[in-house]
Structure formats: C-alpha cells, structure tokens
Image 1 (cartoon, rainbow, N blue to C red):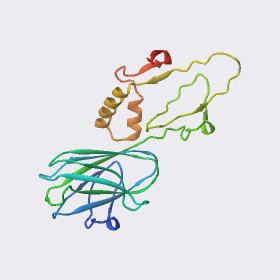
Image 2: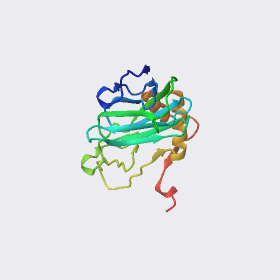
Image 3: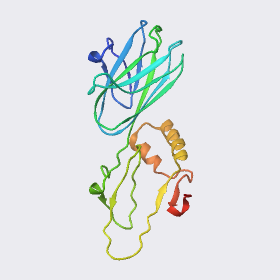
Image 4: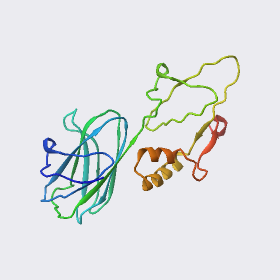
Length: 220
C-alpha cells in the first residue's frame, strides 16, 4: 500500500498517521523541514523501516519515539548523503509510536520524494506467553510443535505429563542462525505478507533445515 505524507506534519501534534506494512512517500522541503508520522504497534514484534529512495544530497536521519516517556528515542539511524538506510526496532509493548524523518543537519531540501518501506514481523508464537515454568504450555507426545525464539533473552517453557518411568527424546528441527538470516532476506524480497513469510520460513526449500538437532551434536 502506497501513501503520501500529509502536510503540515512537522510536530508530534500533527503527525501523519500511517499503517504498518506500507510504503510512504514524502519530501524534505524547505531546509529544516521535519516529517512526523504516527503508527500503532498492536503486539510484540520487530519493525523494519527501509529508506530505499533518497533525494540527491539528503543525509537521511530517522528516529522512533515512545510518547509514553517524553522525548524518549526508542531507536534511530542516520546515513551519509544519498545513502539508503534500514532501521530495525524491536517492540515489547503495544501502543502508539512516532517516526521522525529529516535531513541529518537540517540544511538540505529537495522537491524529490524520499520513500520508506515498512515491514512488521510478529515475534510471539501461538504458545506465548510461556517465559516461566508457571506459564508453561502442556504439550503431547508424538506431535510436532512449531515455535520461535525471535527476540533476545526469550525463553520458552513447556510441560509434559509423564505416564511412567523411562527415557524421553526431544528432537529439534531448526536452521543455523546464519542460514535463517539469509533465507529471511530472500523471503522478504518475495513477499510482505506475514502469513506467507511464516509459511516459507517453515518450508524446507533447499534442505536448509537440520532435521534432528541433539545435544550430542554440539561442541562444549
């Protein structure tokens, strides 16, 4: 979905409202112009903002603000003249947020558009929240379960009902982190639909999955 900024939008109070998973086009004109955008985060996830069209001479600067704490900058990214930049931001709480787009030094203006691409990826799987033993989800023997450790320090607890004494073997099916990042880049180049991204990431396209990961395969 493509949309244009709505001027005036030079402050938090008149920020242009935007949807995630969209493309935004705007102008930095005149010198010192600042463009504010408002968006809502509905759940935990990671937002990728890519400035893929940069007017000649513009030194891009983008910042995300959390209005619940005055002047709090959640994340920021800057670049040199004409540089295409990507800002990755992890959100752990829902609510409204603001995006500021400007020239780094505020003395460049252009009648050419800059363009931003937004892509939000949810990081909670269907078993969340399960970060403590008390919140562990009950799972059954003989079934496959798909879940994610998508944010730093995430822990997933599960609960089993053991009918008798014996040995339990748990196999993990996964990809190396380096392989997963490369595959994610390929997937995002082909689709922006979250459901399709999830489907492709869970599909063993080129034997990138390690089918059975066991503790014995690691070097300690």
